[in-house]
Length: 293
Image (cartoon, rainbow, N blue to C red; front, side, top):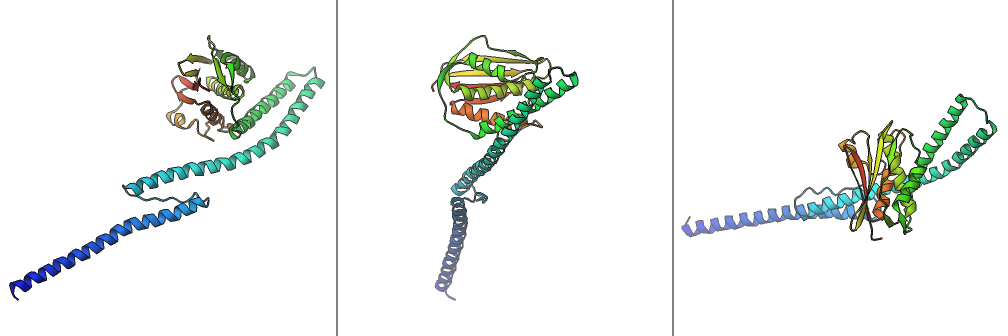
């Protein structure tokens, strides 16, 4: 074989190898792009049809991988909202069905108290147990309804001290717990009814946490564009894992809680263009409300 033929064969082999390598690389690249795109198209179509159960799961470090993560995050949010919507519809029906019997029971108990003016301590104790149970159930029903009903704000200027005083008077209290109200007052444009829901929820939680002979301190802090309202209680420190989730719907550490009270507070505060936060040791719940409503 002459040198020219040898060179020609080497060139042919090199060119053939290059072509084969290029074809293989093109196939690999197309496969790595087309397969995820095909999967993405399928999942998006299911997503449009209301099926949020499918994940994309494209495990790559390029733009498709980033899109996959973002898409799955949105999917999880929508799944959660869909579940909450279904729970809300069911809870609304149950709450409505429970309110009427509770009102009948409360009315019957009040009539019995009137008809039996001279009762024994044992009977009075049972009346108090019934009253406590009715108050607890009513509070839980209100938690559900407050979370489900997201009506628009009715904004007027109010004295925060007057609103807080009204909420304190409506909150079932343990007489051994001391509540220290703010010494100052602030006028704020807000929805009085919705803030009352927040105050009653936070007061109830603080009273439960403070227990016997505990103390609750409430402070108003007037800032340039915001008002801060702090609820501090002398109860035990809140565990770190609870702090992370305590404002999430359906999260509760109570045996009889709905897990919707603090979630309702968060919704209402955010409607007021504000924030709610918590820290521990001591436990302080802080509401930050905008002055510009």
